[in-house]
Image (tube, rainbow over all chains, first blue to last red; front, side, top):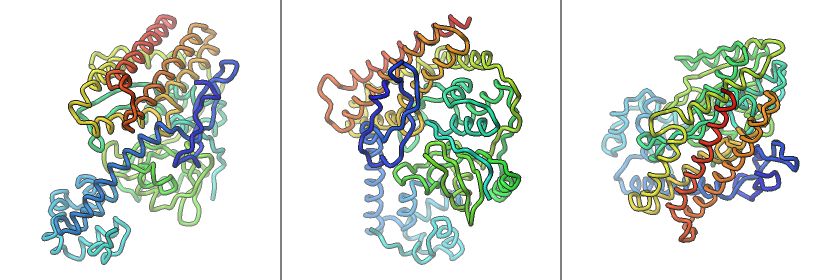
Length: 132
Length: 333
């Protein structure tokens, strides 16, 4: 890639100037700063679209009482039961159980505290979140 | 408290971190040289390992190996540690900082809130250098950024002890001794040979140039097998692995071409200069692939820019690259 061809597109991340390697007039490689490239911005946006769709879907299910608020916080933090288990020390079998509103309602204070601490919110907010 | 450290902005995190640490110890070295000596270039496509539901692909070798291989080949002594308890990992890091030694740590980008929200996924192999301690947090030199930034202690601890695939387990590393008068010729040849071997010598279909061709074969079936939307997602993932912040462009191919130029000069071998030019051309072709793939993602591709055409483009990449690796092996013997 020639130095002049290093993309300088206006993207959602163009305040980060990243390093690209490109050849100068004499054919020698140099470091060039790039503000971003539309092609990869497209790819990144698509990845986020999917994540946001999943999140909207989960929010709807939580509102309809199909899933517990825990599902919302997991989706928001891009976590599955296995990963959340690693972070909180709560077994993934239990986490999956807590996704059901029925089981979620019976959570003891200690477990609620553990979840809330991890998600960096208050226990009250965890049990009764303000859904967007 | 801040250690004496010069920030070094780089394209890729691990080669950037390694370069910055070595420069900090008085070595005059640039990122492409570190990347090449550390044999960073690779390709692998593993359809059965899925991340966020999408097959894994990568344009670089395993995390941690650039630092290790580069140090070993240069005769640099180093330490790598992991920890069972987060408290131990943080305390050990503090001890190094108190002594005035910056240290590199492996982190998950998800917890690094100084990065833009849009880049924060659960990706566990981001490398940064911790260069100082400041009220309730740390001063961090992230090679992909223009200058050092502040990171809270809680964020850093979470990032270092993140869960999931390639969990960093607090991984902390630093070079401890750099020899004087390093002769670069042997390490460069070693780095080059290893890359060629990995790219052409693996009998399994997932790795090296065979991996690229395997990907091409699978790609042809995506629209029919997965439907338009999912196929687009698979493409998007490839573009991101190839281009997203941290490769220097075209899935490290441009950085490697830059390394080949340096290698040609230091080894006084004109063939490697020719290989560099060819690698640049291969990189340009990868960029063309990304551009067409992005058009497909947006649903704006012309009929002649179908998945078949994309597959053919990367087969051409594989062919060109294979020729380069064989040429390098031939000239190095």
